[in-house]
Image 1: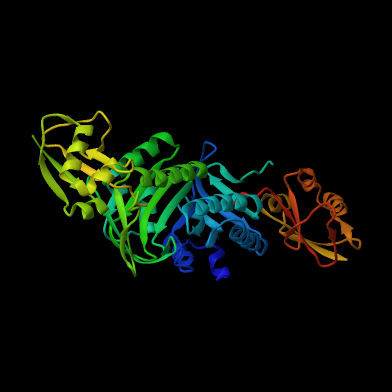
Image 2 (image 1 turned 120 degrees about the vertical axis):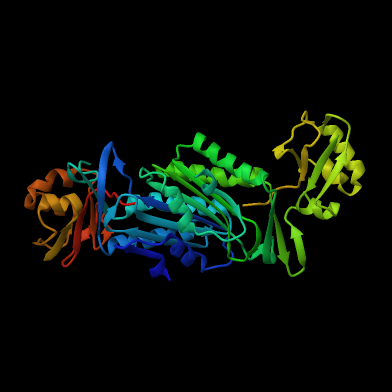
Length: 142
Length: 142
Length: 83
Length: 83
C-alpha cells in the first residue's frame, strides 16, 4: 500500500487513478485535495521547450515516504498519496501530484499545502530547463 | 467555455477530464489545486446509506458561475472549473469538484479553498441523508 | 397581481407542495410578502421568521427593501447544504 | 578506508562525473570530508563552501558532527528544484 501510494516514475500518471487509490482506503473520506504541478511554458521570462528531472534514487523515494508519514502523523487526514515524475516532461504535462484525503476539507487542504512545500524543501530532485538557448539546471547559481 | 467549466449534473464526472478542460485554457499553468467532495459513510455519528441532492435549477447554476467569475477577478488564477452533482449519490461517490489553475500554487490553493467555502455559503443546493432510520434534510432544524 | 412562490428541500416537505401561485397587492415589500406567506402557510411561519431562511426573488437573494412585482418568482430557501 | 562520493545535477556537470571512490582516513568528520573534496575537486570548491549545497551520508542529510565511515555513500546535493 505504502509503496503504491508514494512513487517516483518516468511515465505519466492518472489523477483519477491516484485519487481512487487514496479513496479506496476508507469510506469515511469526505474531502480530497489534490495538488497537481504541471510544466509551464515560461520560466523567469524565458520560453521553456521541455523539462528534464533527475533524482537521487533511493533517497528521494525515502524522503517522499517520510513526508507521507509525517503528514499522517501531524494532520487529521486519513490517507496521502505522492507521485513525482522524472526524466523528460513536455510543456503542459504532469510533474507531481499530492493527494490528501480527510473527513473534513480543512485538514486535507492544510496537509496538501504542507506536503508540496516540504517536498520542494527536502526531496533530492532537480529540474533542468531546456530553452532555445540551451539547457540550464534550475538554481544553477545558488 | 464558461458553460462547460461550470455545471450541475446528475451523472458522475471524471476528475481527469475536468482538470484537462481547465488546463486546456493555457500553457502557463504551473499549479492546479482540486477539491473533491465525496459522500462519507458517517455523519454526526449516524451511518449514512445514500445522499440525495436537490438544487434550485437556474439559480444554483448562476451562483456557481458567479463564484468562478469572482475567483478569476479576486485571485491570481488562470482558470477555474466547478461541477456539482444532484440526485442520488452513493457512499464513496463524488459530489463536487472545484479545480483552480494558476501559474503558482499558492494562488491556486487560496482560490480553491475560497470557492468551496463560498459554494457552501451561497449556492441553493440541499442534501438529504438517507439513514437506516429514515431520511433527513441536513440542517432540518436551523 | 400574481406571483409564483417556490419551496425547496424541507420547506417543500413542510408545505406539501413545490410551488403555488399567489395573488397579492401591487409592488409589495419583502416584509409584507413574509406576513402574507405566514398567513397562507401557517406550518411555515416559524421558519419564515427564523433568520436562517433566505428568500430569493427572480433567482437572486432578496433584501429587506426588495419590492416584489407581478410575475416575479419568489422562493423560500432553507439553509444550503451543498458541497 | 574507502567511501563513494556521488554528484547530482549541476554538480555532476561541474565535476564531469557521476561518482568517484575516494580513499580517506578512518572516521573523518563532515568538515574534514569537505576539505578533502575541495582539494580533490577544485572546480567544486566554491559550491562546497556555499550554504546552499547539502551533503548526504548513506542517503540521509549529514550534519556538522556526522562521522563518515568506510563504505559510506556520500552525495553532494545542489539546491532541490522538484515539485
